[in-house]
Length: 187
Image 1 (cartoon, rainbow, N blue to C red):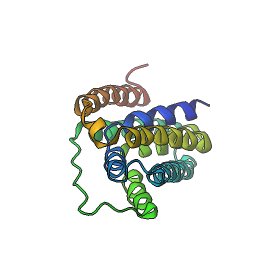
Image 2: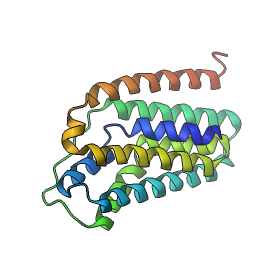
Image 3: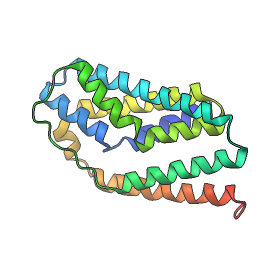
């Protein structure tokens, strides 16, 4: 059950101000908060989290316990770097109204982002891919629904850069602590 919680929190916080959330907010504003955008966001969040959880399960059998812990540390380090980098999202020249196209774009952005990589690491470390995937899906849906509801203007009013930097610092500290623990440097 801890896999569900950690997956939920990792994706929820990792998606704040991320490219997928900003994309949903941008398209939501153009489509006047059409339900198709929200559906595409929910589908992509679910499929990407479950895909990464299954990949983590496949990796779980290949790694020893210390390797699994180091994988979590590396995933958190990657997430910290991504959270610290500024997010630049190009404006869509012609906002599409195709739910399938929106879902594909979101899925492609999510598959390589730090939040879903943490779902991969949680599934590999705990051996509970279903719970990690469900938690990641729920966290992603909630974060993307917030972007859909707020729209582009609502998100622009938030201090997203400061929030992402603060989260990045916390995640980096966790990565260092877990990595040092896995190496036996700290207890």
